[in-house]
Amino acid sequence: MKRTIVTLPGDGIGRTVLEEAIRVLKAVGFEADYVEGDIGWEFWCNEGDPLPNRTIQIIEEHKIALFGAITSKPKEEAFNELAPHLKEKGLVYSSPIVALRQHFNLDICLRPCRTYKGNPLNFIRRGANNTIEEPDVDVAIFRQNTEGLYGGVEWSNPPKKVYEALLTHPRFVKNFGDVPVEELSVSTRIFTKKATSRILKAAFGHAKKYGYKSVTVCEKPNVIRETSGMMYKMAREIRDAEFPGIELWNTNIDAQMMWLTKNPENYGVIVAGNMFGDIVSDGFAGLIGGLGFACSAQVNPETGIGVFEPAHGSAPKYAGFPKSIVNPIAMIESACMMLDYIDEQGFAGKIRKAVAEVIEEGSVQTYDMKKMTGSQEAIENGAATTRQMADAIIAKLG
Ligand code: NAI
Ligand code: MG
Image 1 (spheres, rainbow, N blue to C red):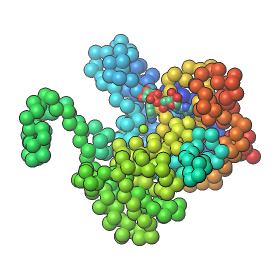
Image 2 (image 1 turned 120 degrees about the vertical axis):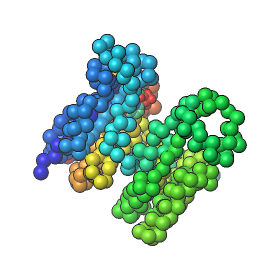
Image 3 (image 1 turned 90 degrees about the horizontal axis):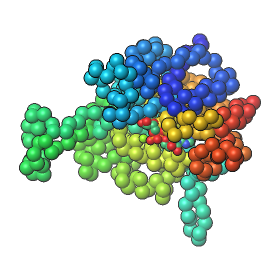
Image 4 (image 1 turned 135 degrees about the vertical axis):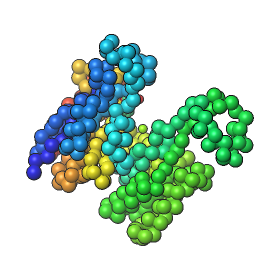
């Protein structure tokens, strides 16, 4: 059966890297029809909605989407750029990628970070006797993608009922009881058992399937006792009941950020709530080359809907270049995650092998890999363009 893939180019370099990823998918022989979905700034400005309903519908229909990146701007700027006829409508901008995650309940976010041999951006550390060590990182981070601190349940000057509810907590009375309500800002951190169980089971399932020996819950249960505490407790129960062969580790997010430069090779699967998952995945991504290499999958195992995207944004300062300089590997690797998800591991494996070979050979490197400042001169100074990097990968597909 020929697949239909929804492409969501979005804004800025999202458009460029997505185009290259599709060229790679075609070159490897993956057969699909591509339908483009409208998303991003242009649709906010002209229609007042960065995620038009027609886009939701085609994702609903075809289930699998490749997403580039979008541009978000602060409230006032967003309003100013609205088409004149939309300015009276009281529209408020909100990020279409967050909206997508919530609309389709894409609560499982996977961000793998694996060292590429020969990547000049690999993390190195000093070993004994002044030696230099380059630890092999192979970590799969599972981030709960819809709840927690990014769940959007928050207030400044909270309404009366919320304030009254807060007053029922002795700690609130003790620490904040004499603060005038209009001087309070409150952001909630809500975890549900259902979503927590889903992300934990996805993490353990991944560890089992791919042979990782440990799952680390990276939270802060000694301080954030209810939410982090619940996640760790549930992790223990799930491990004991369903995954007895896998070690369960427990780290605090702050200590984890310190350890990740000390012993990153010790970690396998890491699982965390929304914000800590965001933080720890950026931390590990930094060890394997940063934004040009960080890929992700966001899926809902119940509906099968999945959106695959690089972790980077639209990088507007590089978007207008006549020759694009950004690294397409994060997007291409995200496309590989899509292939894994739809059981096309053969194609994914071929592309990953080609990417690894290009990086190891080192003759084609984008400006970030050459540690250059991002500018058009980078190309004159020997950096590959986005297109040249994709071409080099395609040439290795054989
Ligand atoms: P960004 O990720 O777009 O860029 C930050 C910097 O990282 C760039 O200036 C560049 O130096 C580097 N970089 C990013 N992608 C790269 C690549 N493929 N190759 C080489 N270098 C790369 O983040 P920034 O500048 O904070 O945000 C720009 C816009 O993107 C904002 O409007 C923001 O809201 C949006 N954004 C969208 C995301 C999404 O669509 N999921 C995620 C993050 C930001
Ligand atoms: Mg982030």
